[in-house]
Image (cartoon, rainbow, N blue to C red; front, side, top):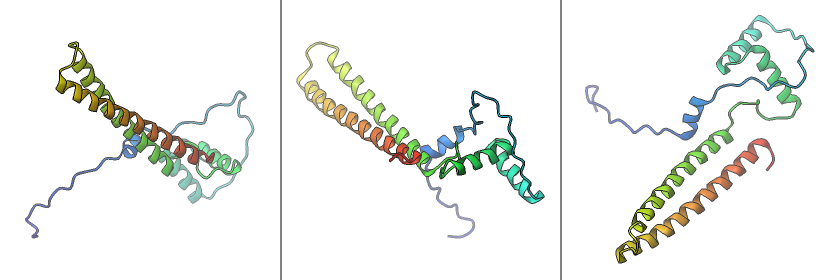
Length: 162
């Protein structure tokens, strides 16, 4: 292909995890019942402090929050920072989007069945459609249950429970 030819556009695939990232906001640590009054002084080089503040800014938190979160995550033996996305977050978001899509199918099938049943005794053709709709609805319910179980397992993996 020459420079003047127009390249074919590839469809853009937007994953649920990517969508969720756009809506997530870095949160402050929840306050304990007692005030945090104790200090630990730490010294950093100018370059280290700059890197800490730059990273904190990208997360939308203060430098003190970042340092505190990193230290407490290390002290608590956690593999990731609180509120930091992990691969499990992406998987959980994908499962949530999949569950929503399957649930919508179930809702549509219910609406079809309700419409076919609204006029009293169904026509023989309608009865066959209703039977298939019932099977599809059952399949959708099973799929939602399976997706929920998989998301629960992923959440357990994230927290180290499984």
